[in-house]
Length: 196
Image (cartoon, rainbow, N blue to C red; front, side, top):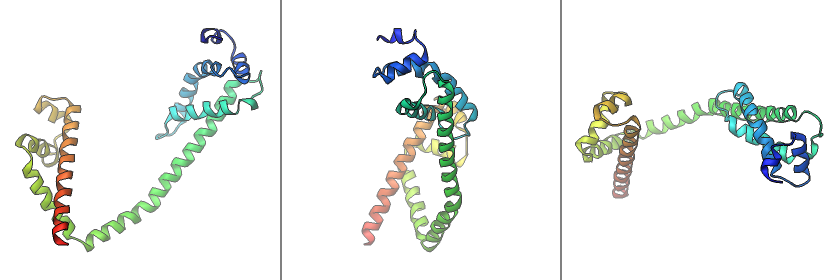
C-alpha cells in the first residue's frame, strides 16, 4: 500500500497492517505520535536527558513488542507508558553516573595531586616547554593567546577586535591549542628520550 494511503487510515488499522508484515505502515504511526511524545518527554525529562533518544527508544520498544498491543485500546497511552519507563531507566542511569563521579572523582583527583606532588619537575618541564612553544607562534597567533588567557577577554570582544566571527575565533583558539599541545608533547618526548 502506498504511504499516502496509510495516512488515510486509523492508527489501529496501520498497526494491523504492521502486524501483517507491512512495516512501512509504522512510519505513519510514528509521524502521528512523535511530536506529542517528544513534547511530553521535554516537559518531564530532567536536564541531561536526550529527549529524541528516549522517543526513539520508545518507538523501537513499541515496534518490537507490537504483538503485545491489544488493537482497539489506546495506543497513545501505551506508547507514553513505554516512554515513561524508558525515561525512568535513563534517569536512573544518569543518576548512577553522577553518583559514581561524586563518589570517586575526589579520590581520583587526590591520587593525581599526590602523584604530581611527588613529581614536581613535571610542572617545571611542562611550563618550560609551553614557554618555548609559545615563542614558535607568530605574533598574530600569540596575540589571540594573550587576549584569551592573559587578559581574559571574552570571545565576543576578541571577535570585534580581530574583525572575525566568534565561531572563527573559537576555531582559531582550538587550532592554536592543538599546535601548542603537539609542540609540548614533542619537546617532552625529546627530553625523556634524551634522559633515558
